[in-house]
Amino acid sequence: MSISTILFDLDGTLLEMQTEPFVQQYLKVLGSHVGDAYDTQKMLGLIWDGTKAMIMSKDAEKTNEQVFMEYFAEHGEWNLDELWPIFDAFYRDVFPSLMEHTQPSPWAKQIVEAAKGQGFRIAVATNPVFPRDAIHHRLSWIGLNPADFELVTVYEESHFTKPNTEYFSEICSKLGVEPGDCVMVGNHMQEDMVASKLGMKTFLVTNWLEDRGEPQYAVDQKGSLEELHQAISQRSGVFAK
Image (cartoon, rainbow, N blue to C red; front, side, top):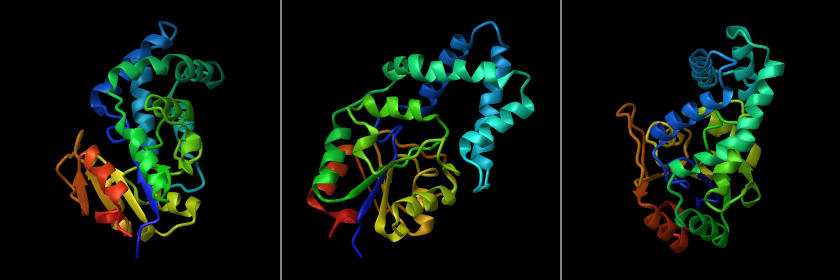
């Protein structure tokens, strides 16, 4: 059975970057934005723990945003009606400055255009632990926007995160496809290649490869962004007709 749909990871895949230093800088800038009116270190710790709560959640009735906000309300000491507009302003106005901590390349747009040219359905399967604005900004850094894709996973709409297989199942449900119709393209062994457990084909991008060691998952094909572009353009390997 040939593949009809390609799911692209964003950070470290389409958007070239080292994830850990980027996240550290993101938290630093967020802390500065929040300012002295709040206990910054306590708040950043709560954001980190709230992110973990999203990753651990298996509640299909709650979006990741709802899980995060409920955790924040339960464990924090701040009025969310006052705090959330500050967060919204950060993601809208300040987050774009973090582009300097990434290394956007022309490959992303070329790969997406090649996939469209070959008739593939495409989606952005980025870990939905960020608000919509933060994810859309990162797409813009590589010259893309949500309209280029059938689906972009964001925390306001997603009910699961990587590395949970339910995350990939939800994408399939929204797109109306089976796992066997899809290739998951990503740079992370544990968070992206786990899609193979559902029966998806996988392509491991090696430019900014991340691998914590365990667990290991099936990799059907791997290569650089240039090799990914070539494979899609030529309909070879996992992308063969």
